[in-house]
Image (cartoon, rainbow, N blue to C red; front, side, top):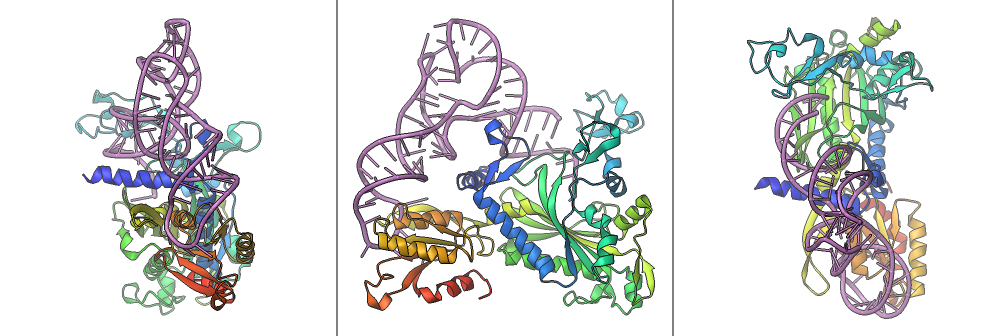
Length: 481
RNA sequence: GCGGGUGUAGCUUAGUGGUAAAGCUCCAGCCUUCCAAGCUGGCUACGAGGGUUCGAUUCCCUUCACCCGCUCCA
């Protein structure tokens, strides 16, 4: 009976996401549109936090990675070079019996998967008319629709990085090995939307292309054999296997730093038969979603395929002159490529907790607590006056809120009973709540100018002096003080 | 893309060939000295289009969206 339970959990997560403003269906008032999703107020904060943390760790905290922000629409030749155009330009025929998809111009020479003695045309099954399949969203640049100005919405952000490799390496004064990273939207027309936001037609990627020396150059310069070299403390003369392993470990520890525990993740090494033709190795970082173990990020060792392709198609040299090795070569690349929306979904699933908590009357009630890691939580601090109808409490609470809101996302609330406000913050995953009470105002002189600081996960409250509030919160949120 | 299921307020459900009920949420007010208390009032729905009918949320058709399985995709 695992099936209904899984469904039930996802339905609760979907419902909460809508009710609290994490995720809405795109264009919902018109009935929605298949494969497109919007982020509401809290979702937008959550997503921004995740992207900021990725950008922070990928480039600002590293000397060997720089950023890029490229356009979604690029010259169509980019997609010829990458192989995205050619694969899907042929009309295809679907077989309704065996579910196979075949090139329309080859069905009389392709064996039927079910009756291998016969060709697809001869097997007698029901087939569709030949249809064009486009991997990419197609559009026209300029107001006139002609074949000359066809362009595509990018199906991945990676190609922009390869296309700008020359410019960036010329101006950034970085020596190979170095990387270029980018966050941005990508679009895929052929996929089947499924599992809430997990597979969407419009999605956001966070990609790094990390350019390294070809193995022979690295080893010539004293690089250790890949197999038994350490994968921490990067060295310029590492080969691709070391860099690949290094990035797998970097990425895993990053996931843990945003609150996805190690035991919720799995590594999947793609088999030789699954690898793309240009890839030497690909490791998928998988998360244990309620609907199955699914990929969050792929870390591929892509050889120098992409840059070589662009060199051929553009006629511009992609070679890099290595001062140390006194050699000219096209760099190889390691590509950690993550899906932002999948990560958001994983964080929401991971945060979702139900608990039976005794109410004010001592009756256990079902509560939902979103246990987001403080670094990603959409709201960091809730600020409340204990009572709404005491102006001096309200004024003081406003003062505290105004002082805190410039430091992190805060939420001021005075509606209803205090317990209800705590519960509301628990449900959106706010790690801390600050309550201004009569002691703050000096009712009990011993506690004057202190507030209660309530912890989401333990529900414990401690009295903190106003002087110490900001540093205490920063400490609790893992921010530099 | 194929097959199955579902569609009534923000959520969870009720109900009917004569345009709809409730609980929770939400909003306003009162009250409340720390965990969804109480009282009063309020907003909000039959996914969309067409057909049958005097009249459709209800019956029929189409479509859209979501969920499940396969396929696809990575």
